[in-house]
Image (cartoon, rainbow, N blue to C red; front, top):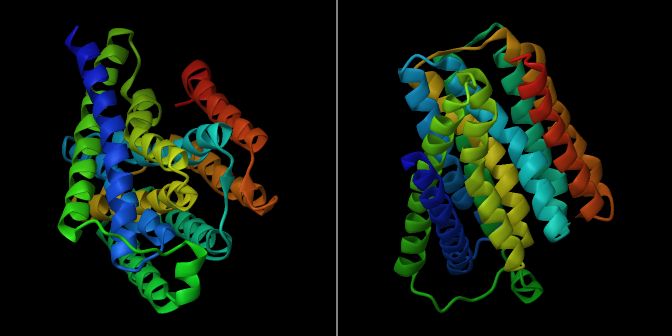
Amino acid sequence: MFAYIQLAVGLILLIVGGEILVKGAVECALRFRISKLVVGMTVVSFGTSAPELVVSLEAAYKGFPDISMGNVIGSNIANLALVLGLTSIVFPIAVSKNSIRFDWPVMMLVTVIFYFLILDGDLGRMEGTVLLFILITFSTFLIWKSRRENSLAAIEAGDIEDSDTPLWKSILFVLFGAGALAFGSEWLVEGAVEVAHRFGVSDLVISVTIVAFGTSAPELITSLMAAFRKHADISIGNLVGSNIFNIALVLGVTGIMKPIDVSQTILNFDIYWFLAISFIILPFMLNKRKILRWEGALLFISYAAYIFWVVQIGKI
């Protein structure tokens, strides 16, 4: 009974946290003259990646490397196939030129680098340091680029506006929203895992399905909230940025703190599915510079197929 209560409370926290985080992030963007897209790629992405970081570190220290690695890979697949798919079905998402020319290439580059780093079956301190360095460089450049390109034309275009909200209040919204997302995701995952164990589901399957879904729930709620509020840049920026943060921050920090052994199952299947989903969203982004409803439906179907393969065929 307690597991079901955890599920319900976790979901409520995710909804509330997503709403507050989006509001605070937008106000911070306006206050610092940084575009909403950049805030979605940095502040919001960091906040929604917090659950993955906590889960991966805890799993690594408790001796469950498959859960640590499977959580991130499964979460990234869920971000692009499930979250982007569902969000696009609800509200077709407009794609900015920056997302096509800069954000997606960086995400794909980080994904490919990550692929080559784990080919030897290990993600150690050296590999973790490389990933963390890439993230710091990327975030620094992104903020510098946004502030450099800030102009009156950008303000008039509506990407950067004025804000009357006090800075301390905006920051408080971001911190409170991120905290609610972290706690909500943790309780959702704990409840879901307990329920899954009652039905005899293995830890390996749980890591890339239930745990990954639970830690992706913040991205889902935040993206839906951003879409409802017509902040499409935060919606897609959050997802692309979250995938970068999940790899470079979560696995980078985890690899430095506790080296991870990578299972052959992940190397033989999950990583290729991850690469394919990451690549396939590019033609969707280029098509009319929108993620249309039918494209969102295809992404959602691909996620359903992945979950079906994992659970039913039992390759993992």
